[in-house]
Structures are given as C-alpha cells and as structure tokens.
Length: 245
Image 1 (cartoon, rainbow, N blue to C red):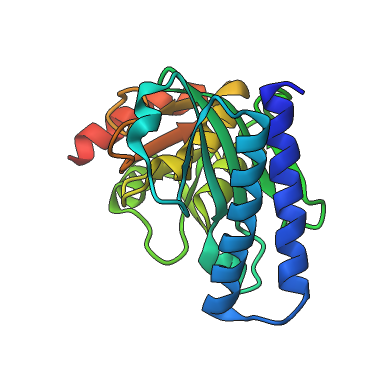
Image 2 (cartoon, rainbow, N blue to C red):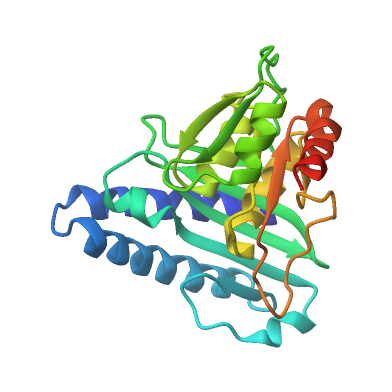
C-alpha cells in the first residue's frame, strides 16, 4: 500500500468510526466531541505506528515528542478537525491524515464523513477544477471570520461563505464550492498539512498569507495563517493582503 493509499484508507475508516460514535447517541455536545477525538486518535495513531514504524507522528490529540523533528518522514494528523461541528451534529468537519517529507506536505487525505456521500479527497487522485464564477467566494469561520479575509473579500468584490472546520473550508475550494480560503486567526500544523497536500495536488496555490512557503514538522507546530486559493487569484489576494496591512 502506498503512502497516499494508506492515508486515504485510514481517513475513511476513522470517518466511519466517528459516524458510528455519533449515531450511537450515547454522548452529545462537548462529550461527543471529546469521545470522537479520543476514538479516532487511538485508531489512527496505532494504525500509523503499525504500518510505518520508522516514521514520526504528530497528532493534535497526542503529547508531542519532538524526536520527530530529526526524521525526514512525519505523519501529521487531526483525528477530528472541527470537534465543535462534530459535537453539534453538523456536516462541516473532517478527518486529516498527512505525511510531511522534509518539511513539505507531500501526501494527504481529507475525509468529509458528515456529507451524505462521505467523500475522501486525496493527493494522489486530483480532479480538474471547475470554472470559477465572476465573484470570488471566500470561505471563513462561521463564528470568528478573520478580519484579513473580510477586508480582502471586500477589496475583491467577493462573497463571504461561513463554514466550520479548516478541512471543510479548504476542501470547499478543492471541490469548486469556493475560490479562496484565507485564514489568519491561528492554527497548528495538523489543521493544514493534509488540506494543503490535497489542495496543492489539485493545482491550487498554497502558502502563508505573506506568500511564504508552508513548512511542517517544526519543533513548534504553531502555524498561524494560511492561504489556499485558485492559482489565477493568488497574486491579487496576496497584494490585497499587503494593502490591508
């Protein structure tokens, strides 16, 4: 099984497990989110360590062992990206499984189990981008939209589309449901590594909001900002970010 096949396989299984946890109706709200995180994390970490014992691992739900920083290959996972949305019985949450190689998001799978189709978007199966509308759509947090995103959207005569998790927002751009995901409110490597691997494989622009490259498997996994957008909009978005200060 290739790395990409493994990532997609594990993301899909974890997604199915999470749907079963939610369907059991034993927990709700915060307790449901915590149970989902723990269940998916245990499965993913055990599976990765069994399948790729020589690789490193960074998970949102595990104590970080920075021994991984000396390794070339490190799996970076978010068992439930959008724990709040998962606990609220919403559909806009995701499962992230990624492999960073020499600091780059090389392989990724993002499962969207909450959707009726339960799809998994993969870095090894890119699809052609649909035609973009005249007005760019910016996916933003439904509770805390980033000021930079609001400013750039206004400057580009765009439309704001509120949505839940980082993975759901990034995959909305991959799926042609939006054109720009601009985030500046603080994130960690597990929030963006899998989405970036998938988005880049689909031909999208991926960078920090100042245009700098995204680097993974650092000692401090805090990675506060992110831009994923259609390549033909990248320069205009980056210029608008600079002008917005």
